[in-house]
Image (cartoon, rainbow, N blue to C red):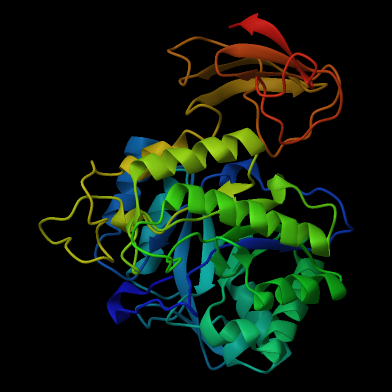
Length: 405
């Protein structure tokens, strides 16, 4: 992905990508934390960060990915060249978003930079640097965006994987993201090799979140379907490394509006991707970037600051947020006992109706007799399930329709 101030340009070898979550765990299904089911990127080093505040307070954005932290020798800086934990511009923005209730993922690397494991060869310093991100910003998820020649640097990849293991030993709830390039045919060989390196080291990737952009397949490329094809192909590759992977272990991250290759990711494409994610229980949706989720005009005229298509402000955020929390709704109050939530209400997404069960989550594991609400109906699970959307499995499927609510 791009650092706007440095005007980086993508090439076929530097296709932007985003978030794959690492965690030390045995083989088996591992789901993304539901709070991060929609976590678009925010370029913290351009002049449009104010859109983040509007997205959170006015459009219900629950999580975002702050980009980018860069390795500088054995130190780390933000894209504006100021040090982490002492950036007088970026740190207050992050603090404000946190006070407004938004969860944070920090991303290192990008098209114009490298994560610390690529710029520092001392393992202790690498571990300490990543730990500083956790300590300074109170995050539980770190993202590593690896592009260009960096994706084939096996020595740096080995240091990165070792850092994952070391940090996990000290932070049991910490999850890590890695950025991998993708084509409509799936990950590159180097990308697959990173998955293999992690598995061989005993580090399991929980969510592989591919950035479906800049395919360089012609300006007429249908980017929504291209994103779906890339996701399907990637899952097949993931399963060749670990048969336990499902769509709950996959994320999709397009570049909204105009792409660097001249193709266009439209609002209709966004709806295609959101619908696919809802159908299959995709682990995470993101996009590049919140800063660009606006029409051009005024001080926003470049590809880094606007979508260069006709749209309303934060229209892509609204479309993807349909996936967060179930049909664009929100759950408040209530307690959960034996898988059934009582005393709470789920509102929105169903014309203002009220449902007493918790909203279905693609990342949640449900067992027989657990109940959920989804798209204006209550549903009861017949057996163990994860990532199967109520209403899509048919009469003989896992979910029993208990009626409208």
